[in-house]
Amino acid sequence: MRLRLLGQGIIAPGMPDWDTAVPVLRGAVPYHVAPMRPPPPQGLPMNERRRARLTTRLALEASRQAMDISELSEPERAQLQTVFASSDGDMQLIDAMCRDIYQQQTSPSPTTFHNSVHNAVAGYWAIAEGCRAASTSLAAADGTFAAGLLEAVTQAIADDRPVLLVAFDVPGPPLLDPHRHFAAAFACALLFRPLAKGGDGVALSVDLAEGTGSTAMDNPDLEAIRMGNPAARALPLLQAMALGGRHRLRLPYLDDLHLELRLT
Image (cartoon, rainbow, N blue to C red):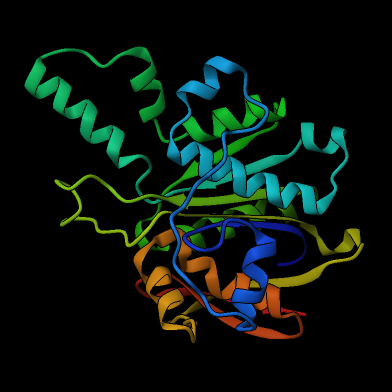
């Protein structure tokens, strides 16, 4: 499956946006971990903006960057198919909801329950963008980014239209952290269309292959983020895009399968 990448976005510790991330990913400037300060979600009405949690703020910021770079037209944005990939969703909210049910014997509020479902972030994005196109929300444990990428490129090829992929994961609460530890919050977005559509941008081919293995980051701090968050398995791909030129990458997927990526 061959596609043309139109835009990308990232929000991570020390990399609040794509412009800041590029020299870091190229190795041109040192990487320094810094606290994340995701901006308020743009495009949401006031009530939804108040209800939006960290997962939503990260996902909407990464997607905004990708869409701004791509310069999609308003009609295209309103009909943009999306894939949202998160291995565990909002574990902080799930923990709080379970505590209320067990300890307080109270039902969760409508807002809490709404935010707890796995496609809540997709719903907020659709409201912010005024988009009514199809959206998929998925999880695949540590292979979530690869699963999301495979789903998104398949939709783009099958439907012959642009597709936006957004991947995100955030650390859980102390009670769940020993069982599912994430090093840091991370989100990224990729927007692409089938290669036959032409236009400027990076060409990407994706193949499903047998065997294991993955492309690592040379920088140990970035490698720690890659290994410490399923969404951050995207970092080698983002680095290749920042460097430009030809690259061949492996992304981990299942125990006996991986994705082979080629960028030109």
